[in-house]
Length: 90
Image (cartoon, rainbow, N blue to C red):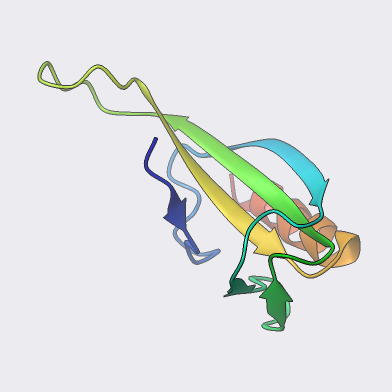
């Protein structure tokens, strides 16, 4: 599955649903920017991940029917803040 990372909070809406908010530790190497506060999130350290999901537009040449995005947050409060703002824009 192709992973699309770091959508901006302003364009994440458009049919996306928050599937889960999960604490992660040692997910993989690398870093991301927290969408809530802008801090650097080290992905091989403790952080939170928000999974977004939506139905893909029908395309007869593809079998995939769902699309997901993974966002990495520096801590639970940033993830909760972002999710609450996301829910209000839907």
